[in-house]
Length: 314
Image 1 (cartoon, one colour):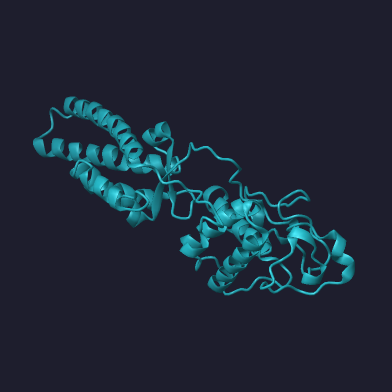
Image 2 (cartoon, helix red, strand yellow):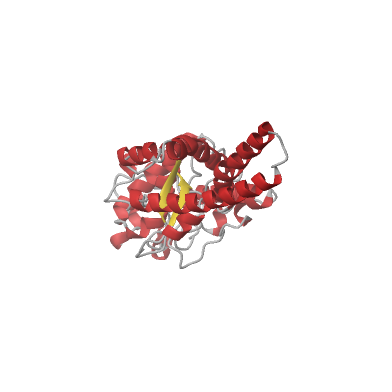
């Protein structure tokens, strides 16, 4: 999927954090964790003075695992990737596809971090970050995560526009488990930047992405549905499922689980005419590329086609 995410087509949206900012964030987190650990150890020493040496050792090990290992894992899970140090430095841990991390991601990062940060004083983590093209340490590689910068100047919103209302919830039964993170990232990048693309480049990229998604799910796009609309509907369905898992326990359905579900006439997809479009009815700069298959349309739909409108299936 790397060829789909090009400088000509889509600007990289996730900006990996630089090593100095990551080191500063880790140092801040360690200062807080070690301070809490020292305070707890002093309290344990006073409260377990009457116990034997084995009991004191067990209490010390439990405090170490709870504060220096379990603490960061719990914080990253509950804050969706923003520890105190990362929050201060404007960083966040996300999945490879840009989504929020879950407990399993934080657990792998924390477990590997004990070795590459605590036991080696950060030497292994620094070397791995310098070698990695995206600055990932070993914990990120094994967990499938990436530390990115959040406070960055943006010229346009990175909001993923919703599909038109007639597609919302239509793919609730689609099997999305076969779509890799790299493809999700490419789809998300395309949807957030499609208005900045040349119409022909954007149309061709949407077709390639839609074909890849259809191949991975085993279900082709419905006839008459433009590829960008298909991608937006599938992305909305994925966001809805994640919202149900995170907040509603699967009770919500379709696009109603905290994800915008309806399109509007002024949305980038445009309004939905009554029939699909054909090349002979397209005028001006919105003309579809010659190598993109389109469906025939009656002549009377000519004047109503927006620049990138969606048409419901006939």
